[in-house]
Length: 228
Image (cartoon, rainbow, N blue to C red; front, side):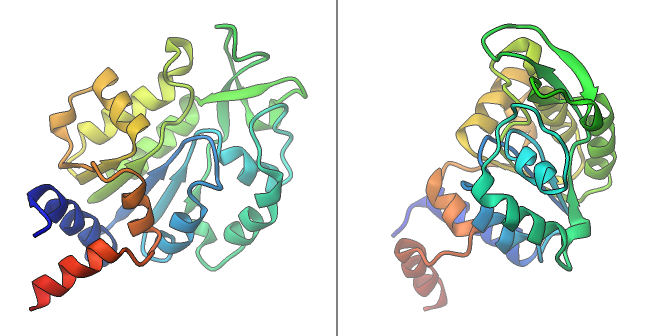
């Protein structure tokens, strides 16, 4: 017997990928594309919109030829990002186009610029107003939302605007909302009411692997018990 929490976790995540009420929007953030690439590839055919923020979006933006300054980038994944953008599902991907930037993440200075205005010393640390407005429209028109990963360095109040805005939009949305990942849960507890979300994943890395489409022995046993 798997227990009620795991049972609910599997049912919630399984319904996300097998029977979401559309439009289905996934919001992914966090620092590294390498942590989410398998999930992106598995979910992209199933979603209506994939919103990307956080440090991971800069690898995609660099693949499109933008100067991202000193922002986080995984150069080994630039070609993969380009392939995804140019794929048959590429139009589902929504990238930010304005950012809060700083010249050092150890200070609290922030200025907001368009991606076309980045200097070589700029470090993207948050999404900004126009991107948030665009993403808000998408989220308000969604019936199912899955969110994993913050939009910036939300722990610093000067860099938290994007994550706070997205958390509030999803919390107040009429969509069925599922959130996963420790940073996302922390930001919800910081900025809004966690009870406004329909399901908060407690599965950690295993939940990500489930959404990547990986074979998980414990989940397979549960599925067999259900079938029997």
